[in-house]
Image (tube, rainbow, N blue to C red):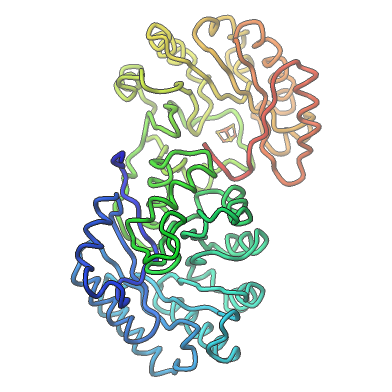
Length: 463
Ligand code: SF4
């Protein structure tokens, strides 16, 4: 089993459950052996909330959430909510409120009491500044309605073991919530859930086991435990076209952002790995100011922090690359326009080509306007592939969404760049982000007219 560089976080387990009474130390040890660095154990009633807090105090890598499950909603009173508040106040390692929500599948508490208890938990989360852990079973519309009515987005949180549809997931993400996947992601018939995972950006996802329930397919029907989360994370990696390491890094950052648990390295990267490609972050400057650019919200790409305090030198880039021989390719990309640093690109690409490394550049295609000359002959022999962000079928639309500093001239220049690139670069691709309202087929037709490849990129999925 390959050792992970980044620990996984099991964002939802019930370690106080009876099935662990005899071997909890061993369960936690196995979790660590399988790369699970931190576990959030979640209370379901007052007793299990207290037990969860005790476990968080006993084990360094365990954190707790306190709340009353909708099954026990009929026990919720003002006094009980006050008691939960005191537990949150008393122990730093209590990091969330829940699990709460609605369960209209088992209906173990009257629905009106479930709704009232859910509202109380949302108010508690807002009052204490802790995120919510929401349970939803066959109550999708009502869960979303109550979240909206109570402004649950002010607290944030996660839809644990998500079982809704894509529309619900999008509504929850729009309110600032994360979506968490458990063992059912691995179940052969669960294509609908995998489609949701495929469609949403991974920046809003967590992974969990819901131990001792819902074991992944390999252990289905048996007692689940946090060590098995690796199986769910591997499935998520497969669905997203990423590596397990990528999923561990990204979902652990998400857990850290939401709950403040775990350890993440947020130092700025000059070179960073996604899948088996090494990306180079050499500038944050750009000739465009795209409306959809994620750097205006957050400089993180697939868990890597890319905000540069200053632009690296050639020597610093080479040092960050290290030995490039094990990568499929090295890509000049980052959150900026790499060809603004043409001289550095040529020097570094020359070094990489000496080592027979495949080199790609992702660009906005306006380098010839920037440098006042045709720069493509200078890249011949240094670059194997170039991806140019087309993003629109015409100049006016392009300027509206990409906001080139060159105005509508930018679009004409990038089309000329694509045509010229064919003379000097073996592989030339125009790309377009599938933004709402953008006619992707029209973009594809532009690429066809220019005789270059075309690739659609998923909106909100960076890197
Ligand atoms: S070209 Fe890329 S880096 Fe520049 S603003 Fe647009 S999306 Fe952001």
